[in-house]
Length: 392
Image (cartoon, rainbow, N blue to C red; front, side):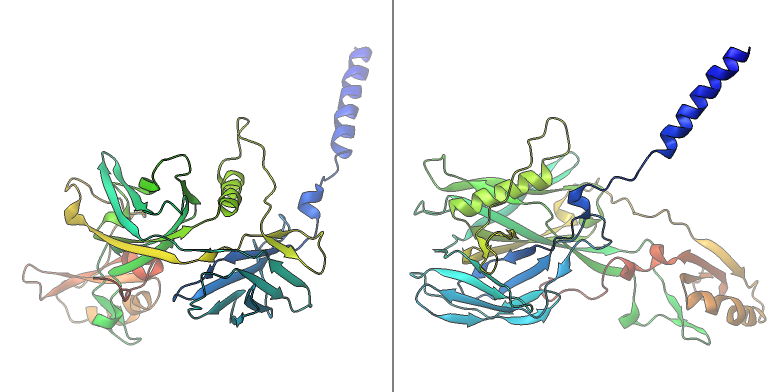
């Protein structure tokens, strides 16, 4: 028995020692305080505006995922000496109105940060992007697949990149007809309606296409995104704006590597992550990494609308919240109920609840009141209640 006690005591001491000897491990990649410059955007050679976004990388352990580069001097420069100044808009964004550049020249981006560090991209040729032929969709059993078609009759493009912005019209689960003005419940004015809204989102994946291996420079039904049949995006009307960029082979390789590193890692069968050799360099310190690839060229875009009438009538959206109407107060047709409304319902109507009248069959006599949570009755929690200018 004594031997057993000694044996179990030794095991307990071993476990305690193992626990006590644990030390936190912070890999260098997590704890290194390197803030590398990240450059996003293209030099638009046409009549559209140029937007360049400058950020700094942060540690993986930081609470923010990027740090805007403020107070920089950013210019577009040609190999013939022309200089175009970009204005700082805030939050690390620098912009210029349409530059209308000479397509026979090469151009680069020049950056001088607030601490006088200098960065420069390589000289790049102007890539003229062919028009988008069409943006379409195919109806599947569980939703729609959106795609883009394009071609270059001169067979000069070969490498493509696309981005998109999608906007959709949707409704709250319940319509809120009343609101509080602080002293009483009133009919909700038209300009304060919270039943119909519009929401917008942008592409989060890298969309590329290449016709290098094809005899003709034709892109046919290159996939953009899928939308499920129960998605709120298809509830009433949906719109997608697709932007198309023409790339050099070097730019295409950069975006392809970035796509692999960002979207195709995470399993034991995934390829190993690779370096991202961009075309931007730190002149002040050539050994400092800089992330990004600045291309030069025109941008083509096309927008389409899809309404619920164009889709199967058996499709119904699934509301994102579990919503029910709860009865709050019944008046029983007596006047004192109005005092209860002032004391009880008005504070609710001015805060997180939407209040609804319960009427008789005539729709005139109010029998009581019900309510719903704000997320079920206020669409402005997830969108805006005014349509965008392009909406039709």
